[in-house]
Image (cartoon, rainbow, N blue to C red; front, side):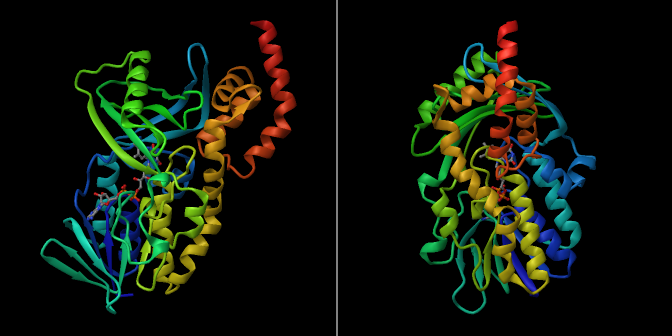
Length: 383
Ligand SMILES: Cc1cc2nc3c(=O)[nH]c(=O)nc-3n(C[C@H](O)[C@H](O)[C@H](O)COP(=O)(O)OP(=O)(O)OC[C@H]3O[C@@H](n4cnc5c(N)ncnc54)[C@H](O)[C@@H]3O)c2cc1C
């Protein structure tokens, strides 16, 4: 593999480019925005910080948060303390630092919008306006809205049922606590993520189920409840992949001379919406496979490392957000349990900081249930 073109210079494309260029490949990264404030919370959990330690140790402005407040309606609130912090970046800073690392490793960085891709004429080619780029391999890292896909049903763009709509504001205010709010029966959640000089406040909801007007109504209520300022707030909106299980299983991530990484490959946790780690790691994994001359290993390595875990989130998300437990919404019960049971709270904190995987979560919660209920009973009796 001598020449690789990467369409998209977000976390997935930038890390893939950096690793390929460091291994001696001639890499061109093409992005229409480069370092920009992509609509996002910008939160990185332990998984990402362990795999990419420069994100914790580096000199770039970021916010370290150890406290999460959960709410599920009036009077239903709980606080979690995290052993390991969640690190929150402005996306402009994060994308900028990742692209700078790619450039220093030897990538050519081009600011342009790719409008077409051709992969069936021997050597793949991409068009960016009037310019044409040829290469041995094309990495599609163009995010959730990517429509540049080689022909064929198994790699077609995601359907509306595989997305969540997000809307939000960058609010000029300061805070030290992440806030998460659930609305009973609502498939999605609201958040406020503190960054060094502002908050990213937003809501995500299943695209086919809720109109933008509904999401905005919940968001405005949240802003009122949290007494956040509206003056100077900037609105944003974007799509977040939340693929159904059948979509994940059917989707092709690799062709003879192309591959999908990050959001373009729908690699997002369907419960939390976490996608930056999976973007970074899928970019890195693909680079490792291409450098070793074993591109065909990419889908299997990805599945073994975290694909199976993401499939689990696709199964859990509809249950977690829309089903009941002991006569009330699971989300409401989650907050109530976290409020009154230290054992449950510790487990939930591990989920938030990325230490607890989903495959062992359910058995763990069942084993802990007697203790959880005893702690809840004890605390109810004292209230
Ligand atoms: C509102 C919201 C909140 C989120 N919060 C979090 C969070 O707190 N933590 C977390 O881990 N994840 C979060 N995510 C998910 C996270 O933002 C994504 O998973 C992550 O950005 C994916 O990285 P990527 O490199 O695959 O794609 P992107 O970051 O989307 O990068 C794609 C790049 O491709 C470029 N591009 C697209 N089309 C073209 C084209 N035709 N030509 C040239 N360039 C193109 C774009 O400009 C962009 O720079 C959130 C997502 C949303 C929408």
